[in-house]
Image 1 (cartoon, rainbow, N blue to C red):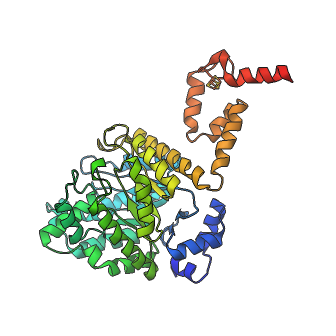
Image 2 (tube, rainbow, N blue to C red):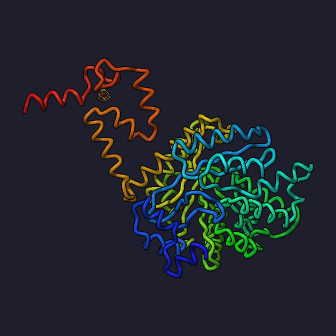
Image 3 (cartoon, rainbow, N blue to C red):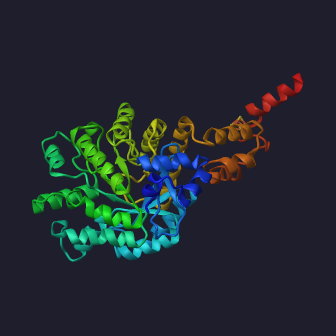
Length: 428
Ligand code: SF4
């Protein structure tokens, strides 16, 4: 039985038991939320990895994307990025490779990373066709499903599948005033195939075939948002919401079939659209876990999009989003470097944690309290231990040693914590 089937039958699975202990949440509650489709457990039943749960009452999770491109294809470099991302706190890794031998890249990355892995199979279908000098127009439906099966067989825990690209949404987009059109790589590949072949999206048309395959491995479908806004001006437009309605319907079909699914979300949206977007997703998709890219709250900061995404990510997590896909400083510019990966994960972890404080997630507020107490008592070792990036504290202490080990070089002998201590000493 799949996680959903076990939960619907009132059976607490071993994965649920593990997660309940890790997150400090009642296993019955987690199981009920899985049965309702409000929580998913990311773990392929053939993948020997610690499960990660995404959804209601649970800590906000963070994903880091890595992967080769057709311009830069260095698997060892991508493995290093995966390791850095995990060390920085990423809960999952998505291998988005599009260059070189993708089966080999995935196998190597999965072996080295040993965490929950997600992929976007259509990238591989497109890359394999490109290798034989073809274009996506020549993709056969069987090739696409064959790649999906290969990914599942190799143990991939969740797959981004752009089932919501339909002729209806393509027509809406064509007649819209959108600036950026379709910014999703997978979505644009599928839309191009549909237009060239005058066919409906095979992943939408044959959704049951996809469900049957996914169910065999108890993997999770991440229903991709091909029509996410890629510009602030495009936020919350008709094509985005039409696709969201379709994804909500597909989420319900998956749930009935015993397959877990979550919904992917924007994208570029201004701050005042964040709460309405969260509410729309939870309402139109019956409480399905929301997996968001950012959201980026402005278009004007290339080089700093980990910050624009963390602003949006903190807000949407606080409102109830479940899973943040990181954004690196290299977004919109180039394939991220190792240092970009670390910055992106840390920024998303801060956003996720800021959201968890508001959500009332077990242990979130307590973490901050411990840090405040360490600061109050000038306990630098404890501050380093508790910091989201302990290396940042270690670097500062080494590079700028203070005259008084209790303080730092920011205020030196005028350290506020020290002055107050002296005052209290006099009064006592
Ligand atoms: S010196 Fe200033 S910044 Fe540094 S610990 Fe003391 S009060 Fe804080």
